[in-house]
Each structure stands twice: as C-alpha cells, then as structure tokens.
Image 1 (cartoon, rainbow, N blue to C red):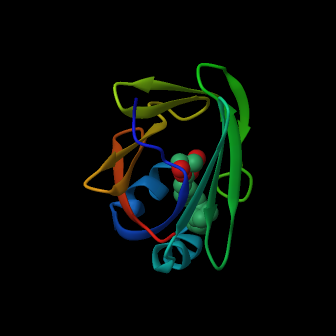
Image 2 (cartoon, rainbow, N blue to C red):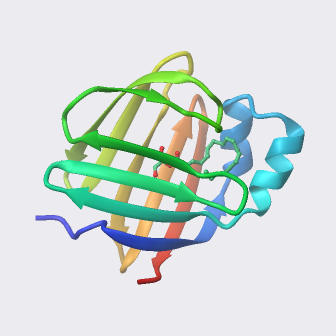
Length: 135
Ligand code: VL7
C-alpha cells in the first residue's frame, strides 16, 4: 500500500519548468511570470477519487480523476488544451498519460524521503518538481 499523497505540499524545487512550458507553447511573458511562482499542491482522496489542486498567487488549476478511468481533461488557464487523460498506479507512482495534440505528454507523482515528487513531461522535455509537506 503506497504512502498517502493527501495533504498540502509546497514547492521546493522546479527543474526545467521553462523547457516544459516551451514544449507546451506557452509564450515568453507568461513563462517569465510562471517561473517565479511557488506552486502549492493540495491533494484530497475520497475513496477511489482524487482531487489535485495546483495553487499559486496568479493561477490555480484543479482536476479530479478516478484511478484507471479515462477522463476528458481541459487544461484551463494553463495551455488550454483538451486531453484524454488516464491515471494509474505503476508500483508506488501515480502515472498520468495525457493523450492529445502534444506527443509524449503526461506526469508521475510519487513520495520519496517524505517529499512529494512530480515529473512532468511533454515532447522531449522533462520538468522535475519537489514539494515538502506543510500540514
Ligand atoms: C501545472 C503547467 C504551464 C502555463 C502559470 C503557471 C501556474 C499553477 O499540471 C500540473 O500538475 C499536474 C499534477 O499535479 C496536474 O495536472 C502542474 C503546471 C503548469 C503548464 C502553463 C503557465 C502559467 C501554475 C497553476
């Protein structure tokens, strides 16, 4: 049984977020602002349903899913694309495949050393984020 991801987590590192945003086609001005933001994750689990909130002072992005159940994702306020997304467990990693216009798009969450890790990938770019628990 994997460690629970539930709770509030604050960003401590954000490697190659710039490359990931470029791969998504985010413009220069938005990237400059986005790079300065300290993102917060708030993760709730209700039975087999997860709610993941990515919060910042400028933009918030919330989505929810059931493990192993495909859903329509609209990345509202981010790159504003529609994806057919699906999240599944691969060992102790929660892995999402985001099928859509962008090749090789997805992410993985896992817990390591009491930190929440997130790897975001799109095309040939990988962004690696780490969050520490705040509550
Ligand atoms: C989302 C990626 C960048 C526009 C603002 C950046 C503000 C705060 O998607 C994410 O996490 C997954 C897994 O937890 C949930 O899908 C992280 C990072 C933003 C796209 C586009 C930059 C503008 C980010 C919402």
